Image (cartoon, rainbow, N blue to C red; front, side):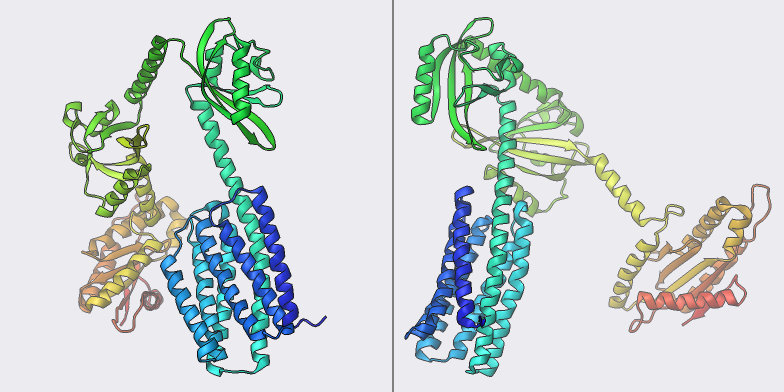
Amino acid sequence: MILDIPTIAIVYFYISFIQVLIMLFVFRIIKIYPGMNYLLFSCIFSAVCGLLYAYQYISHYGNLLVFFSNIFFYFSILALNIGFSRFLDLPVAKKKLLLLSILFFAGYFWFSFLYENKSYRIVVFCLTFAIVSFHNGKILNSHAIDSVRPATSLIAAACVPYGTFFVIRALLTFFNETRNYNFSSFFTFMSYFLSIAGILLWTYCFIVMTVQREHADRTYAEERFGLIFKTIPDTVFISELPTGKIIDVNETYSLLTGYTKEESLGKTTLDLKFWKNLSDRDRFFDILNKEGSCKNLEITILTKERNELTALISSQITRFQNSTYIISVIRDITSNKELRQKLKKSEDTFQAIMEQSPMSFILTNTSGKIEYANPTFLQLMGYELEEVLGKNPRILKSGYHNREFYHTLWNTILSGKQWSSEIVNKKKNGDFIWENIILTPILNEDGEIVQFLSTLEDISDRKKTEQELKIQARTDMLTGIMNRRSFLETAHKRLLTIKEHGQKAAFLMIDIDRFKTINDSFGHNIGDRAICMVTEECQKLMKGQDLLGRIGGEEFAALILGFSKGEIVAAAELLCKRIEELEFYTENKERIPLRISVGVTFFHLDTDTLESLMERSDVALYQAKNAGRNQISVIN
């Protein structure tokens, strides 16, 4: 079979049609996410495009079929753009897409029917598709759904060559304005070939995306359900619908019924003689079977000790992993007194948690006035309770954060969402403190914000440790001056500043003479002392913005600013003399001669870089060594 354009168009149609079937199949097994309907429409439009283009070769309306084929192709990538945006929880660029569509249809109709220029029509067609393809790639790279990121990154990467192909086709068509069939056919062939490859890739990635997102959502739902199941104060148990066997209970269940979890699992409520009146059970299951759920049905139950309890039961039939279960929640309403006692106990527990917690808590009203602060907060910040009640938390404001920081904070919590960050607050005595803050809006039954709860954790020690680690990463541990990496980075930035202001500068490379002999003869401890003594003498030369760093075992580098050449040379000679005169002894009072060699060069504004300075000063240092050491060598 010859792989011509009609053939590949038919192949494109069949593959698109199969893609539609795959999409419909995925819809049946996975819940529909936002935008999936647009993605399905995109596949349908794509299939119609291939069918129309192939049909032109056996029809008398070939040009019209090509026209509508391209229109459907545009609808396909347009639907794909909207579908991606909705599926990835991003806003649809309605204005941009509307403007692009207007320009596309205006240009396409003009060059198809009025001006009748095939080349310009192809240019409009290709540029439009290239823009949408690149925009699709941007959408696929800018979302925040981590579970689908590998698949979307792969599609985004494919959008680049796809869009680039259409740009190339548009440019070649524009500059050639060719009507040569072979030239046009090649690009048409490649368009369908790339589209088929894109369909195959997109189908694979779509399945991966939906499965990954479904799995992530299901995992999140299971974790959320598990958390609610464990922490809800009411009695909860789960049973199988066909058999009625209990498969799980929460801790409150044992407190209410007297039955342990082990005694209940695998049993039915009839086995446990749970119902005092079987009519309650019949009424319960009658409602459940008719409506699929029941809410606040009043029943009488018996505990293990055969005590009677009046309770409200709410249940829901649910399916999970091809099985049907009943989730039931029971609330004891035996007496108002017991209910009040439970509420009081809950309040006392909450109060005890707040009072004894090592975390700081602040409770404010919607006007921002502090209504409660726990002892940990008061002790940490140095306030008395009377000093903060009725005050705004801005008394803690340190001035460290900008307006945008607080703007984001308020926008988040006023929308009913939780906000968390690291924040620098100010104590009563003026000291700053780093804290991890969680701000939670407290909502009433109507979903209205009634209070804000601030939870703060002192992280000052951690931030101090982080800062120390940063300093250690940039500091030579033996001498306390900059290490090689820090010196080179800082010197590079300083040279850029020097160039801007036209300053003078000199670069010195300093090396301890015969240092290996000192180490080998007297040990590394003596060698370390020698390095430290040389460092101290070098630091005495440093002024203002001068830089000094240890860039090797016994090698130092210095960038000195603002002095004349004569002053720099004199200073380097003085440094050599001072080190030569140092009283450097072993533990046995044996004097050790200590000498240095110095290579000096000067910064040229127009031509020099840090690398050229270091290279020249290295040559100068080598000359000083060859000339007998314990001296300086200058290369201008």
